[in-house]
Length: 233
Image (cartoon, rainbow, N blue to C red; front, side, top):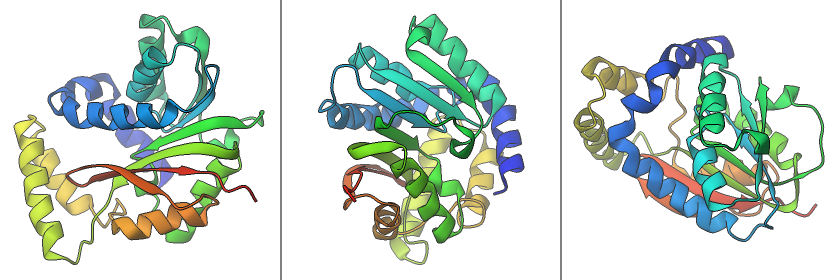
């Protein structure tokens, strides 16, 4: 999906995004819990880069769990970033946050980060070489050994398992009161506008961007999450 179309899509959803997905919060909360376990190895004053942070759900969670961490938020949707900023202000953590409207390639250079999050972001990059370049751009912002927590939709779309997973996934979305027309739209977007790729291939793409072998730490339906450390070289 082109950047402009993706930005417009999330701009339209920003005002009601959290409310719309609230009934599916256990899936999100489980992911955050595992990322928190990974990041518990960081120093008390760690600097965390959050790419495509949307309304800031992972930042709110991590900021409450790690009182000394600071966050740089990169978000191309202006409307999403506005919600994220208000959330940070409401939770009293805005002083620990830097907000950047745009993409990683337009973020000013800084000292290397200790960790990064990229949750449901790289799946919108359809070409594997461009997806690998995205992860390389993250690696270049991290200190050697720095942590990446990454999550995306992943499955082998040619397999019977995928079709069974998709059936359960869409039933879950419907139970969460996601509008039926949106659920059907997702079915057509997967593979066309969203790179739903076999998990082992996603792992290879992350590693090709300059990371040690990723470790799968979480799966809920089609969502898979890994952590990886930046390679030393």
